[in-house]
Length: 255
Image (cartoon, rainbow, N blue to C red; front, side, top):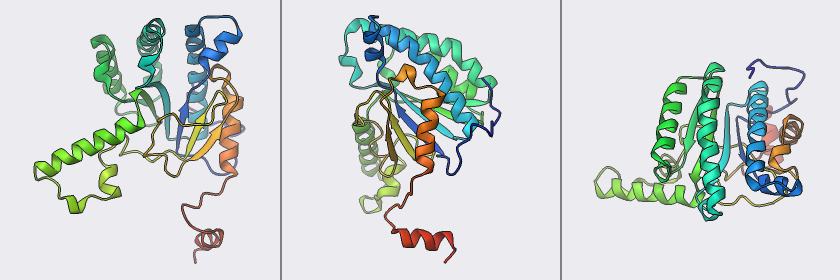
């Protein structure tokens, strides 16, 4: 994995600081090939490598990948078991590659629901890569946006009860500090692959002003070319954050 910037591949114009991706379509990719669903998840690992490499080349600071939602436990037991094993294998094989390329790994979600072995691998991977600075790769695992908001509200209530926080002091900025990834920029671009047009309980708080991009490509096929399409589409968009076009023009001109 190379961390050098390839100007010929870089997106002209605005580059998102933080890209979040809902990796959808693994099962359907496999089904079209008359293969078991887990084959699609295994094929998706190569797409992860490609997207990580492309993100670094383009100067993306944070890449968040939705790997396993809190609702995914409802899937068939054999598929969940295979996904957990694939997660273990990926951590064992890929983390040192990330470390060699100066990429920090963080896992977002309730990891207490995982096996002791998987929890240990996650903690070791985060510790090993903690000081890396080329890019932050966030893996959302056993994560849900509603859970994120609910755990933030619970922790705020605990601090109010303990006298650490006054109810009158609670606002959007304070609440944000209790959510996941509060120390990182919010996602500028949210991508979903697989042709579905919903966000499936992913980063509900953090994506309030994200640009959305939906791709028909199944995740195993979402390699560099498809990803570049998403980055180029983002570069062509105007982000107003509640302002008018005239106000944005004034800002550009320093008025």
